Length: 172
Image 1 (cartoon, rainbow, N blue to C red):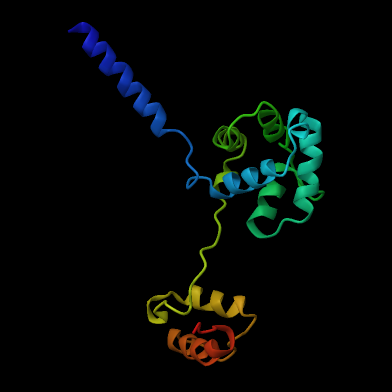
Image 2 (image 1 turned 180 degrees about the vertical axis):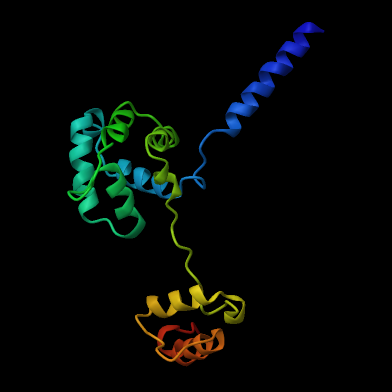
């Protein structure tokens, strides 16, 4: 009886620790960037932390958007204020999984896991009336269009409907 209670206790502790493990949805930019970067390294490059750091700096020169911001936080850019690049390079050189690398980075700088990719809006299928004005403005911004006279939500919707044939292709 005591053994069953002890086993149950250990299983519950394991379940609790497993629930604290970092998931890709919790730290999506970190997971995506580290996976993409690690996939581009050769097996020889993965063994040396200094080489990993140099390669990451090179990788960051072509990054854009949230990936660029991630590089900034890690110190992979020349204009980065801080540098915790070694916190990524060392675990990668030890062949640590991406979730452990991102977990370690999150402990050093919690902003890293606050980064999120923007969700793309499918203008073909979405009901524009259900979107927020911020999302309507983003659609126009993505199209590099403006709406100077737009004041209300309806104005933005009308502008998008006018421009829709120019930017949204209907597949036959």
